[in-house]
Image (tube, rainbow, N blue to C red; front, side, top):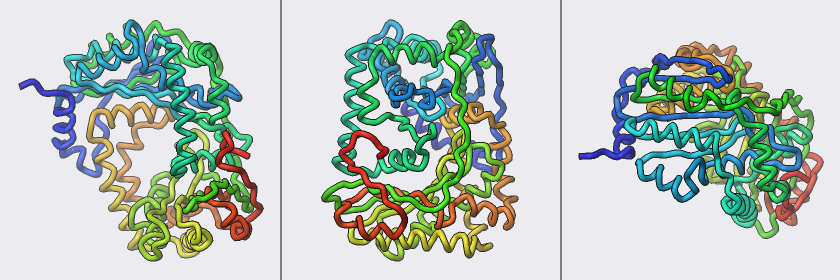
Length: 464
């Protein structure tokens, strides 16, 4: 019987190695090398199933978008898989599907990203497709128009329907106004319209190159053979001609300010409370992860317990720490019916005050440690997960100790570190608050939280 990649994928998911299930396990050995053009290659042999996974990242991402053309990297990442090399969009998709494989692209603040998984027998085809996608995208005019139109329409549809997915865009734009993180990584309706196929091509030529490539490969192969294939496929890729931007840290906000995004007729208010948090390499991240787990990172968290379980004011409330090269936001996010807006926000703020006043007790500290230790191993069970982690660590210049010592660092977190990590969330007097709701019904009541700036959700930008 001929097994498909999908059959093998699920087999791999459930045939979990005991060593990976052990909370104290270390990342398996892998080989690192750098090609002459600066490309970083990470190779991990994993022979339990005949699959190969690739995680490639090209440093840059949306932070390199031209001013006024925000969304360029995002559009490019979508267009790159719409035909590459000798294959048009249809043939490219059929080739991937015909091999039972998977290949997708995307972008973040820091990188353009590509993830692929194929049967090991199709390793040469996979490398050809990945190489074509990154180095020889067709950038077809018709496909470009489709991708750009869909991006614009998707934002407009979200504003007309459920804007929950957009509140972070408004939040970043308001919290980081004037800072590179305040520019919308996926663009907005205005900036997307200014991007042309020529400007996209110019961006590709200047911002992508072999010196920015990180490629991690995990699976059923011999490292020496795979390294030779990667060097042949990517070793001649020229370096990017443009300089990488330098991003400085934004200072934490003091005081409060409110952005009210008016969505007339909305039956719910979506709210986002935040301040500048911590970066990806912060040495206190184990303790911060534990604090976030207790505060708003699981179903039984403080926020979800108060806003959903006890009061029924929301279907869910959470906290999060966005870790970027520089400090991303520490946020509280939820939504509630319009007439309960103030009640829900007050309860979220009261819960934040309780976190700072009472801290986290011994029982909850132990519970958080057990929860995090139980959640971590399944994130590194499969080849794609491991490849993604390897390329992520390389992108942020973080050593493998983060994985190898993860369980140890979680277990060793002291009460003093818990207390210090609570400060990752802002004092309630220092909050940037973003609301999407019916302004006519909540405008007066939310003035209690601070000076209010108002904009309409129909506006094509995310910032007033």
